[in-house]
Amino acid sequence: MLYAGIAWNADGYQVEVVDADGGRAMDPTHWGAERVPELTRWLGGEGRQPQDPCAVVLESTNGLVDGLLTAAGLDVYRADPHHLGARPDFGSVPALALAELARTGRAALAPLTAEGGGQSGRDADYHDGIRRAAPVETRLTEAGRCFRHGPRERRDIALTFDDGPDPRHTRQVLDILARYDVRATFFCVGLHVRALPDEVRRIVDAGHGLGNHTWSHPFLPDLTARQFRLQLDRTSEAFDRAVGQVPDVFRPPYGARTPETLTALLDSGPALALWDVDSWDWARPGPERITRTVLDHAGPGSLILMHDGGGDRHQTVEALPAVIEGLLARDLRFVRADELAGLPDRR
Ligand SMILES: [Zn+2]
Image (tube, rainbow, N blue to C red; front, side):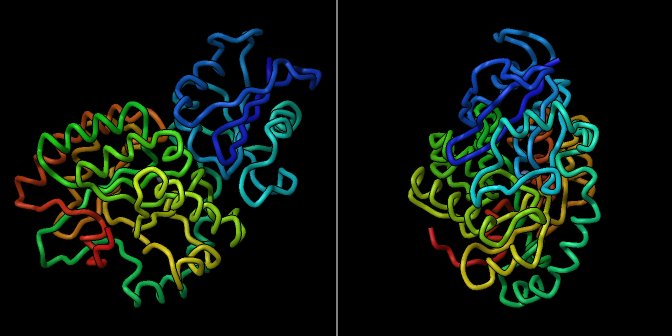
């Protein structure tokens, strides 16, 4: 058995692998975010020596790779702050510390599954954060800077795709949207924007909207105010470098909120875009089920959550034509999320 730790930083992922005695089993490796599919195969044994199976540990501030790793059948665990030493303001603890935790402390960690999602086992912290954030959320809503849907009296609707851009699925989603000539919004993560700027350019050139979805898809209750600010700002900077524009909408990973994070949005920064229709596509229930879930719940003003990145999104791609056709048949008009919310056009 081998033990791997995956850390994230400003330019991708660092991976360390130790053996049963805690010695380095191989040299540390660096992976750009565009290479996560390849990293998944490598951790599965492809192209590495020794080829022994790996138990993998990643942090609760790294919510982008677990989807592919668990779908590939790997043994994946999430380490939460109380398992770890101090973390830098931007980045995770070193990969070697996570690999060592995989070797010695797995029993105390949360095992992740494809069905359970990256934040499984953290329900109490999730709901506590939302409850504590409620007063700030009310202030944001009153200022017109927090929304779950648009006006119900118009026939506007917004499709949104989170966790991309993705080297395979974003282009497939864009092709389908182009086929029907409809607009959508892509809530991208900074790690992927940095790694795949051409895909972001493709999104913008096709007239779609952009949203900020943090840098590394962290579980927000585990961040300090400063750590959150850096997740937000570094992602905006990556967008600016890629396409010369900064999104004016933000969506928190898993929909988590805390007073610290919402306070950061209060004075400046993007508006908070939640959703009122969850397609549940991330749980891969089958394309027919995804289509039915959306069509059963969507209506005028709906803000629909889907995913083009962060895992195997074949089912989303497969469901999308039927989703669009079903909504078009109801005479609904597809707009960007910022348009749905009536935000001023700053593009
Ligand atoms: Zn997400």
